Image 1 (cartoon, rainbow, N blue to C red):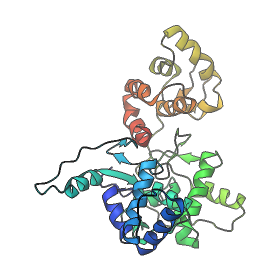
Image 2: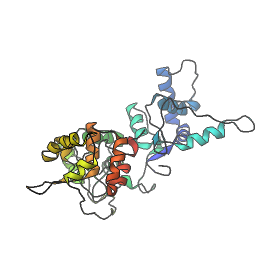
Image 3: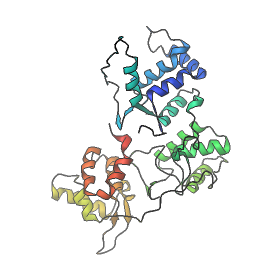
Image 4: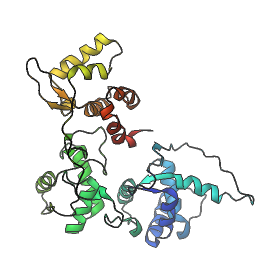
Length: 322
């Protein structure tokens, strides 16, 4: 995650916020209004980083150490330098802790604050391919950015609206690796892709005159790989929802023959008498998480039965892990 343009360290974020006079003034007003700490006397100079710390302590803004989320009850033991100063030790910790730029932007928007100019991303400047259009479409972040770029729309507002539509099932998403439609356990603003056609159809239904240009910021994507799949027996053997093998087969038999809504998107092709339907193991795993039939930890073990999909599964569930 370090070096990923979708994230920024707590240390760098704090510095950027302190240097933005508009955000600092709004932070002071918010802290004063909410009386976060009655014993503290906030100033414009200290309010931006103070508000950031409040959001982190409350858990309103998630923070990650490598790929693990840092809990609100986390305690770090800091060692002072020879002069008894803890500044360098604090900097080391805060440079290692990362927050998602998108999470931060959504939080700022929810408080109706002004996004600091230094944090507004330009896809070309930052070489941030998550904002650019591929043959499979835009990410949620990219779609919101394109609406702002092409139509002057409010990027934060449209990011939230698009994400709400995805979460509600009103916008289909594609796997960025092969373009296949699927239902992720936890949709992310920077990963799944939405085709321009699907976005424009949804925009039209939303009553807006906005329409995205299919050629805007188009970049080549990785070559499409042929659909890969396994048969029902490998799914049954590979995903032990029930510890008892007989019970596990009973659990799967009906679901693989007549897939319920939560599982149907994992089916690659429909079978026929004597020929099994074909299934995508990674999407089966996502479906099981969404149904709460297995935990991510248990599925990590199960996915070792499907080595061709294991890396894909881990990549797609990076931010779902504690």
